[in-house]
Length: 234
Figure 1 (tube, rainbow, N blue to C red):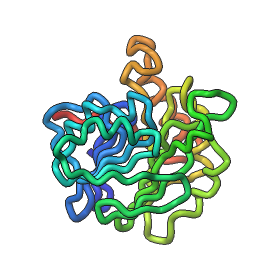
Figure 2 (cartoon, rainbow, N blue to C red):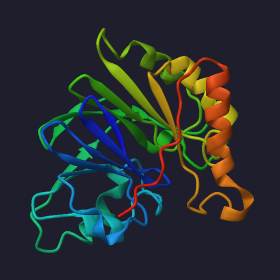
Figure 3 (cartoon, one colour):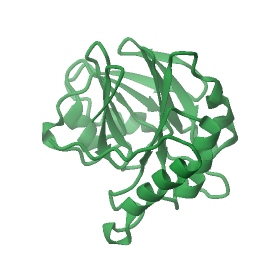
Figure 4 (cartoon, one colour):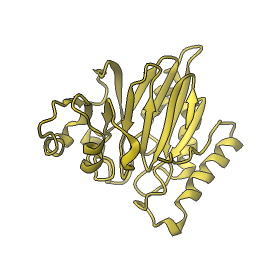
């Protein structure tokens, strides 16, 4: 677990993170194969409709009666399948438009591929920016290094810390080397690798963890603070 000014960040594996705010709100982003004991969430953010990001069994596991969910529009029909009797509030997000959910400001940010078709810009899929006190968390979603990242170097003010959660495994997202170039553009206070170790891109035997290690090593060589966040144990 990482504690940044009272904001707690836990890595759930793949692109999944569990964030606890200063006032105790529990936010989960892109849960996938999360353990049963992880507990319930006040807010769930889904970046796009692929099964390893919009996982119905994991969303259902995390939901309580008043959980709010933020999704791109293509996930709506999937989420409706698990509503049942729960009085969940579904918030449809669109890139570039701020919304409020669970009392928090949510900023959907573009996430897409360049030169490959896994995550088309036309899909309006996204990452998320969260401002939690003096901590800004950028979850990049499934993306390549995109021109819009240039805007992220201006998101923080004096006294605020930016934490960037960046995919590093290649194929569907940035390679470790490309993610380092993105981190240089964003210039966060801390960069954390994600999108590895779940067997989605490669088998575990092919060394996805090595992608995260290489990312951290290359970041440090370029003057970017980076660390691997160990998967939370429940």
